[in-house]
Length: 316
Image (tube, rainbow, N blue to C red; front, side, top):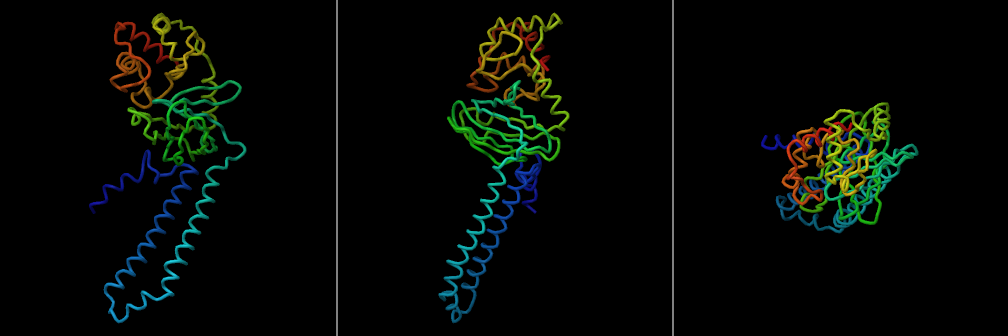
C-alpha cells in the first residue's frame, strides 16, 4: 500500500511508461521485456539460494554438480544475453530507420534554449517548440553550438545526446494530436534544469496552416502602440540578439521572435507567453534565468517596456 502513491509517476506528461508514439511504445515494450526478464532471473537465483539454505545438507551436493554449473553458469547467461542482444539490435533498427516520407526538422541546443528549423525552400525558424503532424514520422537532426546537451521527450521517444561538431538523428511520431513536454537530460550549465521544450502534434491540416503562417514575415504595425513598441525594440538594440523577419533585426544570439506571440512559453518553458510576462522577462530575465546570455533592460521606463511587450505578443 505504501508504494501505491508512486504509481502516479508511471503516467502523464514526461513519463516513459505512458507512450504516445511509435518509438516510445517500442522503448516501453523493451523496458517491460528487460524488467520481466530480470525478474525471472532474480527469482531463479533466489530460489536456488533458498534451496541451498533450507534443504537438508545431505542433498546440497546437487547444487554443486557440474551439470548445474554448466547449465546455470554458462548456458543460461549465453542464451539470455544473446536473446536480449538480438532483441535490442532489432529494436534499435526500428528506432533509427526513417520511412521515406519522414518530415525532417533540425534542432540546435544552446545555453539554455532550443532553436528549431524546418529546412525547406522557405525555412521556418522557431524556438523551444516543435510542431509536428500527428501520425507522421519525423526525423529530428540534433546538434549543438556550445556544450553537450541531451534531447528527451519521454512520451514520444528515447533520449539522444547533442554533440559539438556532430549531427545525431532521432525519430519522433505522435499517434494523435497533443502536447508533450521535453527536457534537456544532460547537465549543460547552471540553467540546465530550466531548458525545457514542447512537442506539439497537430492534425496534418492544422500543421500545414501553421507552417504557412510561420513563413510570413512581420509587417509594419498600423496600431500606434504596436508601432512605438516596434521602434523601441529596434532602437534598444534588441535586434543585435534577435531576428524579426521583415525588420532590420537580424541577430542570432537569441531566439527568432518573428512569431513569438504564437508560442506557449518564453524562456524555454519558464513563463507562459503574455504581454505581462514578456515585460517581466525584458526587465528581469537574469533573476528568472541567471547567466542567461540575453541581457536584461532594467533601466527601460515602464511605458516603453509595456509597448515592446505588447508588440512582441502581437507577433502571431
